[in-house]
Structures are given as structure tokens and as C-alpha cells.
Image 1 (tube, rainbow, N blue to C red):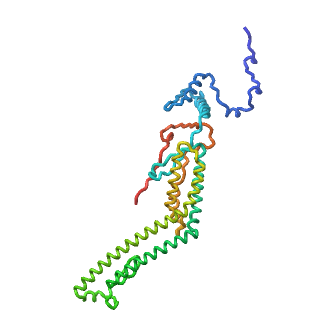
Image 2 (tube, one colour; image 1 turned 30 degrees about the vertical axis):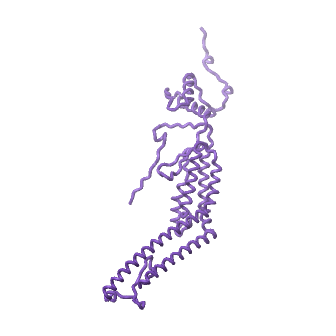
Image 3 (cartoon, helix red, strand yellow; image 1 turned 60 degrees about the vertical axis):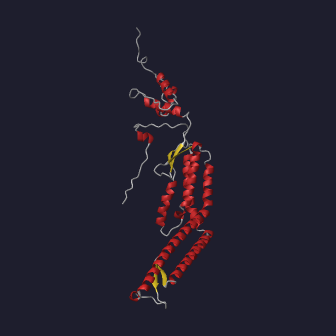
Amino acid sequence: MNTLTASDLRLVIDPAALGFSDTAELAGQPVPWIGQQRAQTAAFFGLEMAQADYNLFVLGEVGSGRSSLLEEAMQSVAARHPTPPDLCYLYNFETPERPLALYLPAGQGRMFRQCMTRLMKTLIAEIPRQLDGQDFKTERERLVKAHKEQEARAFVELEAFGEARRFTMHRESGRIMFTLRDESGRALTDEEMLALPKERRVEITQAEQELLAAINRYFEQIRAMERVLDETLAALARRVVKPLVDTEFQQIQTCFQHTGSDQKKLETYLTRVMEDILAHLEVFRPAEAEELRSENLLSVVSRYRVNLVVDNDGRQGAPVIVENNPQFRLLFGSIEYQSVMSG
């Protein structure tokens, strides 16, 4: 029977053989699957499954390192997978409550958001300058002058219609006032009107009805002229601004020519944004009330903001997400709605 000494019962390890000088250096080292070879094989087999609707269930004692081991395994497998695309949400012009989902190659989502932000800053600064140019002002003044001349001719015709029935007219606060006059041109009072023979009063009443109908036709004609003027001025503004807008959007389209399966969706969205900008040029014009202009401009420009939901810029491989409370909302998200109470 051999007698064991204290030195025989003591394990002595040379610190130089450990390969580290402090245990803090081991924090980034992988955790070994000590004595769990079958569990390791099963875990990697499950993680490599490419089919949907397969899940991996891990069970073990507290402190056995199952969470750390599985997370390292997931990181290892994810690094060999392709980097997923970025996900952007865009304004839906047809149904605003249902934003459009746009997938872009990793890193392009951030670029697209920056490009759209830069585009809006450029248009907010440049469109007012385009609409303040001398060529635009000259053409606009010509169109407005032609409209006023046409309106004046229509009023002259109405005056002639009234004078033929002994009525004189003048405009006051957007209304047309008319007065009946006698053969000498003097305005008749109510008492003088009542003193006229019945037949003459009937003739005057009929003439007044004819004049009222002519005045209504005049206002309808003026409203039609104003609509034509508004449409013509809007078309002029679009014609002046469109080269600028086309150039800016062409630069964005050139930068995003290879965006994968959502290429067509991106092109359609950019076209829709360009059309919407040209349809709302009035909010870009300087207004007397700067606060009102800013409010209207913000409400329009906010539609062109790119919401970058998933940003995989700089990522290599697939992401690993650890969610300790895997509820549906936390895993898949949800759309928030804003209630608006009518007053």
C-alpha cells in the first residue's frame, strides 16, 4: 500500500501553458461542447435545415451553458448564409393606411433614405427659385393680363346688355349692383317706380329677370375662365420645374438600377413621387404667411420620407436575433394607427 503525499494530491499547472495571462481574455473565445457531441451534432443539423416551419427545442440544466452554446452555433451558421436585404416602408399614395414594403440589397436602404432626404432639401430650395425666375414671371403676367382682358370684355358685354334695358351696373365686393334709369339717365326711386303704369312695371320686371339671368351666365363664364387660368398657370409651373425634377430623379434611378426583385416597385414609386411633387408645386412657393407655408409643405414632403425598418448595412451573413419574450408583436411587429377625433 503506497502512501500519498500532499504533493501527489495537488495538480500543478504551468501558467505559461494556459495560453492566456488573464481570464478576461477568454470572454470572446467560443465555448466548447464538453461531453455533448451528440447535442452539438443535432444542434448544427437543425440549424442547417433550409425548410420553413422547423424549430429547434433545447432542454438542459440551469448553468449548463445551453444558451451560450446555441447562440454561438447560430452565429457560426448565420455567418455562412447570404446577407438579407434591407426593408423600407414607403408612403402608399392609393391607400395611405397600407404602406408599401420595399426590399433593397443590404446597405442600399440607408443610401435610398439619404438620397430621398437630399432630394427633398434640393427641391425645397430650388423649386421656389425656378418659380421666381424672370421667364416664369413674364409668362405668368402675360397669362394673367390676357385673363383680365377677357374678363373685362365679358363685363362690357354684360353692361351693354343692361344698358339696352336702361340698367347701369357696377361691381362691388365681388357682386354686381344694377340701377334702373329713365330716358334721361337719371336713377329712378322706388316711389317713381311705383308711379309708373302697370304695363311699364311689367316690362321692367321682365327686363330685370333677363338681366339677372345674364349676370348669372356672366359669373359662370368668369368661373370657367378662372379655372382655365388656374390650370394654365399650373401647367406653366410644371413645365418650368419639370426639367429640375427629372434631373434629380434620374440621378436616384441611376444609383439604384440593380435592386433585385423590387426594382419595378422602386421605379413605380419614384414615378409616383415625381407626379405628386408636380401636382403640389403651390406648397413650394413662398407665401405671405411663412408658418402656413411650412405647415403645408411639411404635410406634403412627409409623404416622401423613407422609413428604414431593417438596416443590414455592414452586416456579413444572416442576423441572429435573441428575443427573451417571443410574443407575436415582438417577433413580427405591428402597424400603429393614429386616431383623429372630428370636432
